[in-house]
Length: 112
Length: 115
Image 1: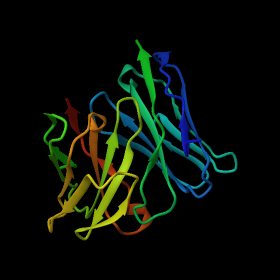
Image 2: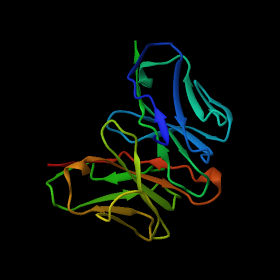
Image 3: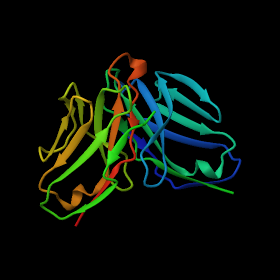
C-alpha cells in the first residue's frame, strides 16, 4: 500500500462546477498537508498549506483535513478553464524540512 | 523577486552517460531538495541539501549525487544513466527555520530524456 493514494482521473467538469479532489493516506505521523497545482510540463505551484485537522479557505479554494479518517480534500468553487491542470496532494511528518510525500496527482479539465 | 530557477530546461542523453542539473533557490532560501517525477506519477524525493551537506536522502542509488554551494545553489549529478532515469527533475527551495517558513517552492524542472 502506498503512503498516499490519489485517484489520477482524468476528471472533466463544466465551467462553473464545484470540483472535489481527494487523497487518503496511511501514515498517521503526517501533520502538514499541501495541495500543489501543476500545469503541463511545468513545476508544481503551491496552492494550499494546512497544519493538522481543519479547514482553510483561500478565494475559490478550500482545503479540508480529517486526520481521524486520514483523508484530505481540495474544493474548487466556480471552476474556470484556467483551473485545468494536475492537482497533487503532498504531506510530511513534521517541520524542519522533512521530505514531501506526494500522491500521483489528479488531472482536471474544466470545459468552457 | 526571482523564484526557483533550473537549468537546462530540457536535455537528451544516451545510456551510460553522466548528467548535471542545476538549481538556484528562491531569494532568502537556504535549503534545496531534489525530486524525480516520472510521467504520470507524483514527485519522488531524491535528497536534500542544507549548509552544503546532504541532510536527508530518499530511496535512490548512489548514482545520484549532489552538491550545494556557498550561495545555496545546488547541482544534481546522475552517473551511468539508465532508460528509467528519464523524468522531470524538480528542485524545491525552502528556508530552514520555523515550521511556518519551511514550505517548499518548486522550480520549473529539467526534463531529462535518456535514449
